[in-house]
Structures are given as structure tokens and as C-alpha cells.
Image (cartoon, rainbow, N blue to C red):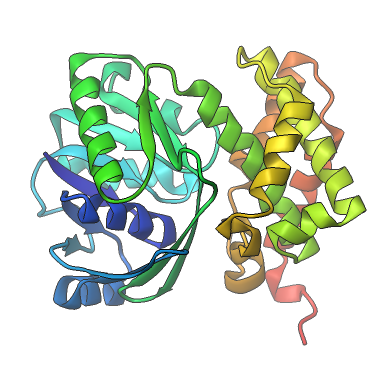
Length: 320
């Protein structure tokens, strides 16, 4: 099956590297020309912590989807706020039987895909992987734990999504990324959402790594507040989450795995690149759902306002 990765920055490049390592026929699509040219000419240097380094070749690349042909599977790995535009730019490679896949951070991405394809053509999920783009043609993966690193499933189960989902499951697994194509992925999807809502903005605001958030009493206290609100919203949305159990898993993921030394993507956006974040589809979405459901979400409300203020005022911030 032919696969296109729409958005091949840090996460897109890492996910594509696992797929290519598993034998995928994959085309990377990204406007970052230097990266696309380097990968096409020399392949990808793929660092996997703690495994080591791999040199992967055989990628096809393009700066747009205009001339890559119709794909069997189109995976979207842009930022969530870029997804509507990404779907439009991917139009030339989408046919009547193409399966659209979102493995991005954030709530509501699958709903955007539904505007283009019916639910029986859509797969969604997420990965528990730290990702970095070190430069053109070079990326790093920091798997989050010894458990499953990739979870995805169909929006509506169908022969089309079953075929595509099982194909992706085999490619990821053969490429060294433990994964599962679930009949119902929502419990695992919410697991990642709540983890992102906790670590991503706190790391960005506090300017510290994941492990240091949980080692500090105040940082851990903030994490508990965020998790409590997120679990209440998830439970009300039909996906029961228990706060003590979730916190135990969160502490385990913050120590003894390679992501403990990691700055999440939102921290990278704020501290390194000074660009717009995905706060609106993470903590902002929790706040929105909370209002709709009558569930107070003061910690998520405040965090959303802080990150939103930061990202609107990068040019005015004090820097050494």
C-alpha cells in the first residue's frame, strides 16, 4: 500500500522512519525543502534511544502533494491547527478509497478529517514517543515506556480501515515501534491526551524537563490538578479514567524511560522556536468540554491563558 506522510517535521519524520524501517512504500511531504532534498538524496539518519543509530534510505519526498499520485493511506502529522489547510493541500493524493489517518496531538482532529471522508475511511490515534528533528535528514525518537508506543483505531470499523490499520500495525511493529490497531482506541487516545495536557504546557511554562516536573512537589501538585480535571472530562465523555491510577502511570513514564530527559513539543515551540502551540486542542479543548459538561477546569483554564499569552508575545519577552 502506498503511504503519504503529510507533515514531516519532528514527529512525522520519526513516525515515517519506523514505517520505512518496517518496509513501507512511503512519501514524505513537507514544505521544508532542505529536509526533503536531504532525505531524497542521502536518506534519513534515525537515532532511537537507547537502541542506537540507523541510516534509512528509500524514502520518496515532495514539498507538495501535487504530483505524488493517489495514495492508499494518507497520514497527517502537521500541527493540529494546521490540519484544515493540510487536508486541502493533500487533495491531489486522496482518492475514493484512500484512508485518512491522524496520529497528531490534540482533541478534535478526527472531526476535521470527517469533513473530507466518511468515518469508515478514517483512522486516528497517537504515539507515546518523544520526537526531535535534529536538522535536515536527521531525527531522534525517545520511546516513552516499555509498553505500547503507538495506539490507533478506526473512527468506524470497516474492511477499508481494517486493511489499512493492520498494514500500519505490521509496518510499525516490523520497524521497531510496538503498536496495536484497536477495535476501540479511545481509552488509549485519552491516555495520551491527558499526558500531553499535563507535561506539554507545564514543561513550557516551568522551562524544565518532564522528570523535573514530577520531582518537584509544586510541579507534581500542578500535574495532579490538571490530571484530575482531564480525568473528570474524559469520564464524562464516556472514557472512564481514575486519577490515582493515572498519576501512578504518569510518574512511571516520567522516570526510568527515555522521555524523562525530553522537552515535549510544546516546550520546544515556546522555548526554542517561538511559534504557535497546540494549546487550543489540548488544555483549551479540556476547558471547552468542561464548560459544555458543567465540569470546573480551573487549572486547564489558567494554563491555556498563560500559554496563549506567551505565544502571542514572543517578540516582547525578555531574553538574555
